Length: 86
Image: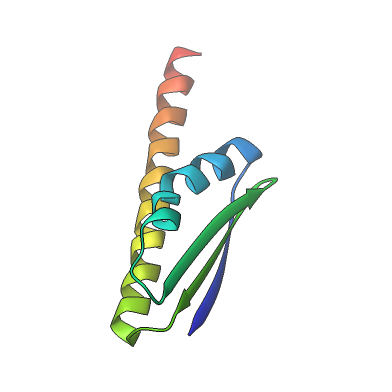
């Protein structure tokens, strides 16, 4: 099984931050599972390959998207605070 996910952001800075937020998934994964995340310009590219069970594949995708979502929420909080200060 293989999934390719592309996430688009407002700018390169946000894309880089999301890629870093999910990058721990690139390092330590079980045998038969591969997660590679990169960024270019304002986009994040994630490639997931799984030779294990379908539930592992689905859980990996959910985990990656959940981590990306948390990073996105941090952007909105940061933007709100910057808007109040600036």
